[in-house]
Structures are given as C-alpha cells and as structure tokens.
Image (cartoon, rainbow, N blue to C red; front, side, top):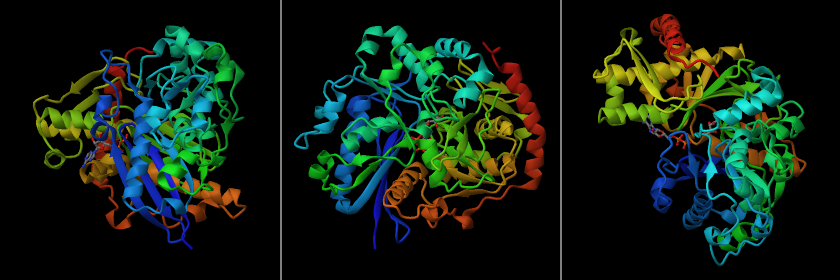
Length: 526
Ligand code: ADP
Ligand code: XUL
C-alpha cells in the first residue's frame, strides 16, 4: 500500500510542499518556492510589500494564489503522483487576514481550469493586500479592545493571549476604522490558512481552532467566537467570520480546478488548514510536554504542547488550541532570522564567516550585550525599533555576531519562564536550524540538548501528517497521533548538540544582566 498525503505551507517568504508516503513512512517530495525570486512582479521583499511606515507589513494574497498554481505545476512537472494523493492540508503564517467581497464564494466554486488562479480571482478582494503577522501598526486598536475586555489578564484568560498588534482582531478593527467603505464591502474575512484552503476546496473554508486562537476573537476554552470580543473589535463582524472547525475537519473534496488542471483525484479531500506553529507542533512530534521547539524562521518562535490551558497573565506568551485537541504554548520574537541577517550583512559576511566570527569568541561575550530590536519587537513589547549595545563595541564584528544570537537565546529563556515547565530537550527547525553555531548557543543558554529534525520544513510536514490524521479519522480508522507521526518526526540523534556545562553557568549569570538591560531600555507600558 502506498497512501500519499500532501502538506503545503504558505509562509512569509515561501510556499512549500511536502508529500508523504504514509505506509513507507517517507517524505517522497519536498519543494519550496520563494516569493521574491519566483514572483518578482509583486515587488515583495522577504515576502512583504515595502511601505514607508515601518510598522505596516502587508502582503498580496494574489501572490499566494499564484504561488499555489506554480507549486502544483512544479509537482506535475516533477512527476509527483498527484492522482494518488488522498488528502491535502496546509499551514499558513498565522494572524494574516484576507478580505473578500460577497462574490468570493461563487468565484471559488467556479474556478476555471482553462486559465489561472490570478485571473479567476479578479475582483474578489475588498482589500488588495493582507496585513500579516509582522505588522505592528495597531497599538491604538489593541488598547481599545483590551480596555473593552477588562485589561491584559482578562483578555488573556478569554482569548489565550493579551491583545497583540499582529493578531487579526486588532487588524480588523483598524481596517474598519480607517477604511470603513472597504470594510463594509467585505462579506467574508479569511486567515491565510483558510484563504488557501478555500482555493483548494472551491468554497469558503472554516478557520480551525488552532489558527482561530491567533485572532483575539475566539474563547480559548469553549472554542467558539466570543460575542464580547467580536463587539469590541468591529460592527457587523460576526457575519463576516467563517465558522470555526476542529483541526481535523474535512472541508470537502478538492476543487475540480485542481483535478482538471493538475490531475488530482476528484475524491481527494481538503482538510482544514491551520497555522504554521500548530502544524510545526505535529511536524516536530511535540506530543509530550517535556520537549520544546524553537523555530528559527523569519521570526523566532518558542513553542510546545500543554495538556491543561494555563495562560500567561502577564500577557507576553500565547496559548493556542493544538492540532491534537489539547493546547500549545507559543512565544514569538519578531527579530529572528532577519536580525541575524542584518548583523551579518552590516559586516559583509556570509553564514560561514558569521559562524567563524561566533566561534572565535567565548560564551558570554565578555559581558557584552545587544538588544537587537531592528524591527519593533513582540516579546518584549517594543514599538520603537532600535539597537542597544551595552558594553559592546559596534565595530567589533565577532562580538556583534555572537551578541545578536546570545540576546535572542537569553530572551527566549527569560520570556518562557511563565510556562513553569522548563523543557528537558529542544528540537530546532526553520531556515536557520542548519546553523550549528547558532544551535550551540541555544543549547548552552537553555542547558538542553538540541536536536534538528530530518525535514527542515516542519510546518509543511505537520500539514501532511494532519492530512493523514484527518483522512484516517474520516475513514473511521485508528488515528492515534503517536502512530500517525511515528517514523516521520524523530530527530537526527547523531547530530544532537549537547550543552556545555561551563558555558551554561556563564549564561546563568549573564541572563540576569540581560534582563536588567531589557528593563532599562523598555518603554513604559501603555
Ligand atoms: P519562513 O518560514 O518564516 O519564511 P524559513 O524558516 O524558511 O522562514 O527561514 C528563512 C531564514 O533562514 C532566512 O531569512 C535566512 O536568514 C535563514 N537562514 C537560512 N540559512 C541559514 C544559515 N545557514 N544560517 C543562519 N540562518 C539561515
Ligand atoms: C506566531 C507568529 C509567527 C507567524 C509566522 O504568533 O506571529 O510565528 O505565524 O511564522
């Protein structure tokens, strides 16, 4: 038997596809399309449209649709047995919102395979661009919603998170306030995940509980849209939200557009899509609470499973619903890969030389600290970008390379303490997880062994595994998560990076200094 499942990942910078053979427990196809390179006519940089206001970060949803056509065309050209795929699911960068006119449902249901998705979608968007997770232009709206819900603690208790700039609720509120006519014309609001699922299924897809947790609109425990949060966000919003669904829900058979154009099986099922972090929980096999994951993508995220819902009442971290039906924790640091790249590029290095610079210095960097807030930071919350150097000479190339990575890892250690469950091991993923110098600092700061997983594309793999799980469940077969992920998510143990005890002791002290530097340089909280 050779049952194939497809997982797609519509991330900030790329669209990836992973096909798994469930029976031989193998990834049989793995491909990625970079938006800037493959679709230069959208003029994005790192997948985002340039904007004079550094707080505004939007992307064109049409670009994601065009990428979907290209990825399917690649798969067909590369001989992927598309007709044998039983189910498809996907992962989307979280929080990004897509605004659709009343004709969207009709257009999705009649996608014409003789042309392409871009032409088919002409006239469906009530807003041509989608604010994405990197956007931090909604502080005012956050304050308004937070006040209406009764403050940080109340907002976190209700929705799983304090009200955050990038979350869809405040973004929707800003749209309603600044562009009321377009808001009025919006019949349906999708997340990146549900928008992509809608194209695949040829109908408006629901939002799954996991990605719905990133909106500040869902009751995290009851898993339904919360009337108070909706009222605090925008008028008439209830009618514009699609239904919520369990993360294993079937949206429907794949649209005939993909059947006719690319040869998919008309009986292949589209599973509801989810957020990239929830999908990575599965793709990294984070079924137990002692294993945390750190994803070094455009952003750096720290996450893991949680069996009981316990929110961060200080409002820095998030609790989301998990694809297993339990909960997951997540902390998102915006200055991830892009901050490391900024330091690398400032000194005209490539990654090899960046790493040599790191290894030429000692753990602790002689007490030098950087606060690498190149962009407005999410954790800790910093709305005015700025680089702070404490006991660090800006011209010392090696010390600056080490300082940016040490700061990121110490910040993760510091801001994950609310979970009250220090991890015993860490799994690393994302574009920068190939970098051993970075992972050694991660191991030394946290004191945990760090493993990389075989497939760097954990979100796409997680989506493929979710497709398998949902399909098995629908077929009435056993869909136990341990069995579903077995053989796919084991780390590459030979490449485990062990913490150095001496270096760890250095960081035990340095993290105190780092925490003080943060406190001294943080703006007072609004
Ligand atoms: P996303 O999923 O957010 O689009 P990825 O997980 O694909 O991002 O990661 C992309 C990032 O990975 C790039 O911005 C790049 O800086 C980083 N990266 C790639 N290779 C390396 C490396 N060898 N060392 C450090 N960072 C790297
Ligand atoms: C999570 C977050 C990012 C995005 C993009 O809250 O904002 O991790 O999901 O990867």
